[in-house]
Image 1 (cartoon, rainbow, N blue to C red):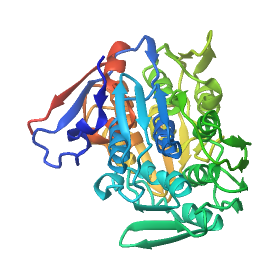
Image 2 (image 1 turned 135 degrees about the horizontal axis):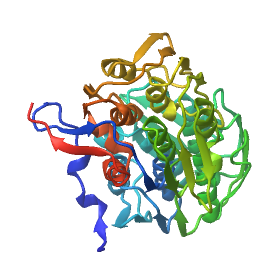
Image 3 (image 1 turned 180 degrees about the horizontal axis):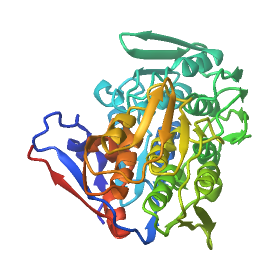
Amino acid sequence: MEDKTISSVSKITQSPLTNKENEPVLEIWGGHPLSGTVTISGAKNSALVLMAGSLLCPEDCRLSNVPDLVDIRRMSQILTALGAKITKNGDILNIDAREINPTKAPYDLVSQLRASFFAIGALLTRFGTVRIPLPGGCAIGARPVELHVKGLQAMGANVFIDSGIVQANVKGRNSRLQGAKIYLDYPSVGATETILMAATLAEGETIIENAAQEPEIVDLANFCCAMGAKIRGAGTKKIIISGVERLHSVDYRVIPDRIEAGTFLVAGAITRSEIALSPVISEHLIPVIAKLETVGCRVIAESGDCLKLIPGALKGTDIETLPYPGFPTDMQAQFMALLSISEGNSVVSETVFENRLRHVAELQRMGANIRVKGNHAFIEGVPMLSGAPVMATDLRASAALVLAGLAAQGKTIVRGLHHLDRGYENLEDKLQGLGAKLERVISNQ
């Protein structure tokens, strides 16, 4: 395959259609069992932050196993606007960030992609100054940037926000951030990533207490260490970074996407089908596997990096989302679809984001018996769901509606596919490969 410059890809990053005419929708005919093995793509949330981390390096960086997603293309355009040279060859991104202008992040793209804001740490520590718009993304909660800002201020940065733009600079003869001891009031993934990147080129030692422990944090730390950074403790609540003068070129492979893997495990459970998935890192899926087994399924680790889902009679259970290693908020909607047809009563409590139960109304449209009180969803399992037209409200809600459609009687039409395309690579093709009956078409309504 020939190299293609990312800057040539623009149409897909524009705002999604608001007119229902000519809008792409997913038509799903439920009730078909699945079988076979599905390939899991590279982790979206890891790839995005590694792309931001590439700005730390004044040499070439080569990332492989990068999923082909709208969010990845948006981040590529943001890096290109900053001055990076990016070429794509299959699942490989080559990023040359030698000549970067740290004040050129475009508002129209950053406002659509929250992960792009995490570049603030890399840009500030490398150049001593940065100007970047406040972030956007799924409307699932406030997700403030105060923890990012406080961490950078603790390292000596002057930070102020004016008209939706965050500007920061480092005073002093060498414009270097200074190592500091930073306690996070909440184990924010984004803040941990921002501060970790900022600390790699800071002067002295930085300690992050109450750090996020997600696998994506470990992947970022490993990526930075492969470039010459000195980091220990990633994956625990205490990360210690000893700053270095400069980082070097790297060739690095993105970890498999644990949320995509979890989504396919639920696809097997909700359709009562035996399926396998590979590659996966099973340790990243411990809370998801535990809940699937509580619901009545079995998950078997096969040779190498493969998992197999063995379906069983579904029964209700309670779920509370928590920071890693707790149950992931990004799997809450998918499990709610599963619990809606599981015998008995279930309670799902969302503690991470305050606005992440909007898929309930769409599942109710399909016949689910769910009532919401505050951040709790009370579910009484029903024998079956019925196909219906539904609207995705965010990325993981879109996956939940697809899963519900696979299990429902009749035809389900899912709108709002721009959410789905942000985080799942070739989802319908992968499901078709397993035997699902679904098709993306252009709506004429």
